[in-house]
Image (tube, rainbow over all chains, first blue to last red; front, side):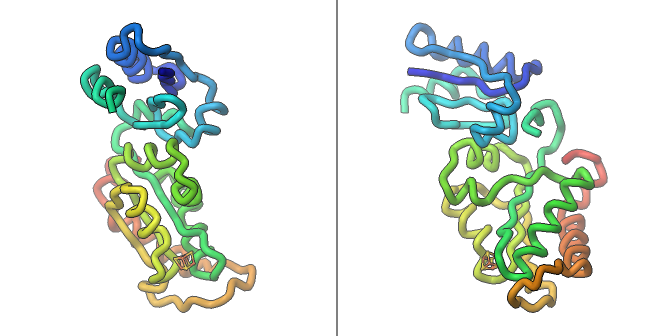
Length: 74
Length: 131
Ligand code: SF4
């Protein structure tokens, strides 16, 4: 599984990245997308955003570890 | 731009941008509002094409403004289909403007009226400076 966090690097983006890492454990590769062009090309207009296996699941919110775990298990 | 994460209330604007005169009025109103710092325009076509980033961005906003040219209601229906909850809605023909073929000139009076309606809807949000 591949998890991507979209954000230009503010505190909320970092928090979402940390929460995603905690939620995924060793099951997924969590990476950051900080380039504004790449963020916009993904259709993401509000950050931070999270994509799981290429599909953006949430934007503009810092999801909790539990919320991300629920998303992963779906 | 996409880095809206540290702002307060997030307002997004979806417009039908239709081919008819009223669709173009709807589009221009959203362009102007964004220029004035009232909301961020998002692509309705991105909703129609099921772009997950655009859908998630719509769902992540606090206020979702829809602007349709006419009662065919393309914005409203597309947002409903994607389960993006719309909070504020304006239809150009509902303000007394007639739908006809676009002749290349956007009716400025209509654009201003649409903008005024949206500003009225967003009243407290606009006043607080949070968009
Ligand atoms: S709402 Fe009316 S003007 Fe807008 S795209 Fe649909 S049919 Fe055209």
